[in-house]
Length: 113
Image (cartoon, rainbow, N blue to C red; front, side, top):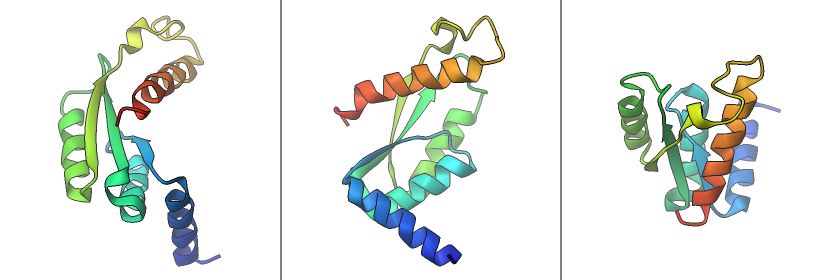
């Protein structure tokens, strides 16, 4: 499958969903996904960035700028990673706990945006 065919397949899959909420950091992976989602769904694609105690200074502003460049609607939520059980103790699987909690928070807002 060529790159163009892969892109078309991704666009079709996104379009079939009707609407999407993208967990958006402004990094390469989430930016590519957000751009494809916006191309496929327009206003029915929303990028959401979680602001937290561990978000490096300037990253939220960067995410906002990238979302604006893409054209996708962008929302910011606050997520208390350090309050997430199993994260602050810094275990080997801390990323699992963080992502699980973040997905829980995104699911809460997905019906409202």
